[in-house]
Amino acid sequence: MSSWIPKTYNNTIPLNYHLFFWIGYFMLNFIRWGSYFDDYMYSFKSNLVEFPIHIVLTYFNIFYLIPKFVLKRKFVLYLISLIVSLAVVYVVRTGLNFFLVTENIWPEAGGVQNAFSFNHILAVIIGELYVVALVTAIKLTVDWISERKKNESLKQLQLQTELKYLKSQIQPHFFFNTLNNLYYLTIEKSEKAPDVVLKLSEIMQYVLYDVKEPKIGLLNEINYIQSYLELERLRHGDKVTSEIQIKGNIDDIDIPPLLLLPFIENCFKHGSKNNDQVSLNIQFENAENENLIFSATNNFNVNTTKEKKHGIGIENVRRRLELLYENKYSLETKVIDNTFNVLLKIPIL
Image (cartoon, rainbow, N blue to C red):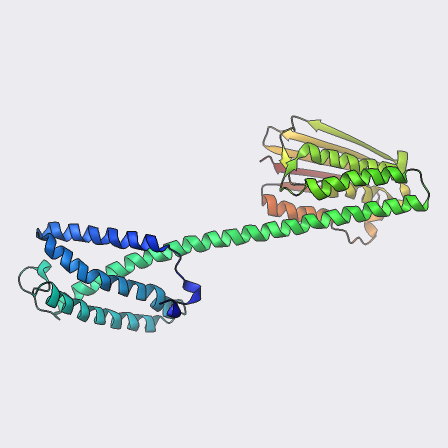
């Protein structure tokens, strides 16, 4: 049977569900018609003859006619094939009922009825179409639900893959910048170089081991930002000043790892031209346990925007936000009076 079932239309319903359905449907018909005629033996024998025919026609329609014709939009051929199938079913069903059950092939109509009359043909075909339509509707509904779940799983997998890719970009990006700083200090034979190596190793532990989970505690992310700021102070000394403010309780807030660092790096990119003073004001606010508001303000050197940059920076963050929060976040970046301002609002989950 599997040789003529298209691979793209395999059975999505477990075999035991098929068995339960047909047994239940058989029992319902048996009791229904047995009660109607007050003859349970006739009902049992007639259903025993007809149900294998129902099953064959139904699966022939589901696993052959629909994939071969309907899914390929050959509707005329499907209709012709279905009519021919119904004609064969009528002959076989009528003959088996006549020889194995009763010579009165249509007792439902009252009196003795003849085979191959218009009304009998119509009644048998409608009965078969009823069964075929019912089972096909169940099959298509289950397939639709299964396909929808599959598409959702694929979508989530794609999102997770892209998120992992974006996050993986941040790590080498950060280490590349930090190693450049370390190289600068070694060229200058600065005594700060060992401290940079030590601080860098602490951050490496965070990046390589602590950010494997989809979310981390906000306090851990803040500690990471502070470590980054300390690295920049080791390089620039007193030219770097920063202040971090926290409003509300943030102890239990989780956020995606490495989400906020690009904003901090961006502050140095905009404000560190020719070793200018870099001044940052960073604020975290828990807004009524619904939104986390992150803001960062730093001095802005317009000359830095004229240089071509090839970092991942803010665009990376924006893409991650779209994947993680869809339209449930807001991000504003603007320049006001020689200061670069970032305002990010994300939901607390």
